[in-house]
Length: 516
Image 1 (cartoon, rainbow, N blue to C red):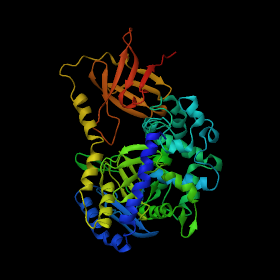
Image 2: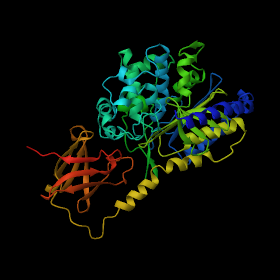
Image 3: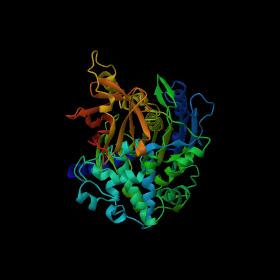
Image 4: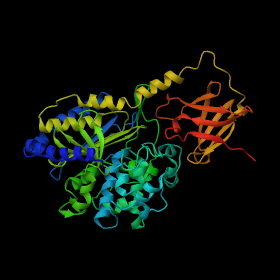
């Protein structure tokens, strides 16, 4: 941790809890916690009824007691099944703090340490440079400070590659910061941290999560395997906005990054997990995880900047967001799938109050807003701001401006476009070590782009201007165009292609592979 980050975190960690404890923790009562519930339910029901989200499920714990569970809305738009406390949702990145708790259990048993080197646990794993490869630890990967970019591996997952393949290719990506000097939220960085931490057990991560956390807490509806999610009849489908309506457009199998974003659960199970975390590893009177093994996950290790709504300082620990809020220290984490999931957990450790909100839609800020609404109701007796609107604006801005810019650039072809070369000039195999092969083939009167293992992802290319084509790879944002641009050689055939949406890390440039 750099000195500036350390000093900022130290001052806030020392001062903020003292203020919040005196002002709120000592004056909070179960009566206040319960009195806030009817208004919370009313607001949640309004959000569903007014189209804010298709459905919500909420659990609240206070002083080691589950004081509320409930559900609202439909599991899938257009079908009658309703959501309740037992409805299983895909958690997306809310999986990260759950996985952090699993690693804490392994640390508690002495099987691994937070500072164990990945090179000792999983010698095959590599980063781009030798020194970080040798020194990177479980802590570094769970704190997102390895130098891996935020998008590292996500593109490969989208193309259908499996976890082992993705992790084996991360060394091909240039770091976005010096080792341990910058924060970049990396799904597959954390995934490797968890994979490596489980290695000493000789078991799969999926089995470890069940053995060390889900089974001891009675979380029978929770799993790290997507096939288990699909077995639940009472499950929430993903929804994205299409033509102004929440629509179940696509499915999402997040098994490659299940450690970072692929757990499924319901609020009844997650309430038990919140009890464990707020109890510092104690559950039903038994110390399941040593406090000293769990505590490091809530230490502010790297600065994330300020909270986009409250403006308060925010840090990242080990799979946890850490903030110093108007109501004291807060541990939390949000989750999102652009295909249609939004989740959040918000814990106030000094007050021993925790909230988890699950929804089956994206983009929406309703889950985060409901946490702020509920805390206002408990501590102030009324809602002090339009938190839902503020959080909606944050999540709405993630794709709206990008989509508008892309459609402005590529939505309308030039009035007099330069003609393309004959399709045979573009057809062929292109490749690089990171993406593997990309096949451009003629068919149905045009060109098709085939990506992923065995070319299993196929997309039509639409001519735009000369050697620039457009394609639409994202089912959840069907109107989002991306460019596919060919570079033409002296022989008037394409020798290189650049695929825009796969080029965040400079790996979207592929060279033609000459066929024998």
